[in-house]
Length: 133
Image (cartoon, rainbow, N blue to C red; front, side, top):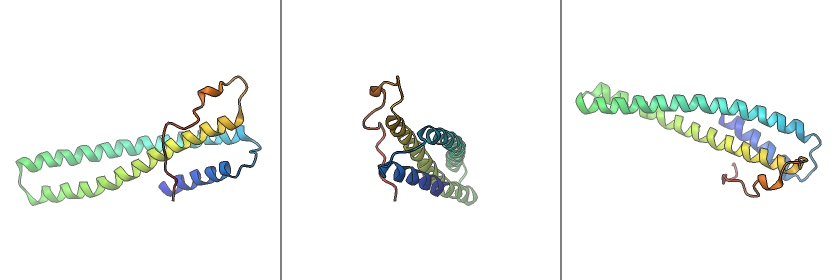
């Protein structure tokens, strides 16, 4: 999932960096909004799973304080090993969706919608996102 999101962001950044006039910017913005919706849903699901694993890990940690058992300790480390990749994946999804928001703002700025106040679109996006590798 992370590679797919990064690839999509890179293709949009290349399109914006090319300096060429985007022919159908409204269709691109509509597609981008659809993609943002899908990625927001993915992000929500992974947030819930990450919270569940964090709660389970903390619960097992509390159980370790009362029952000194090797099995409970192994369960704690197994949950901890799973929790770290979940947190990393959620981090990638969160930053990717924020990047898509910034790209949408840039497309809106390029479009110059009639009646849309230019000052509503920030010159510098509120989120600083490093370039993807």
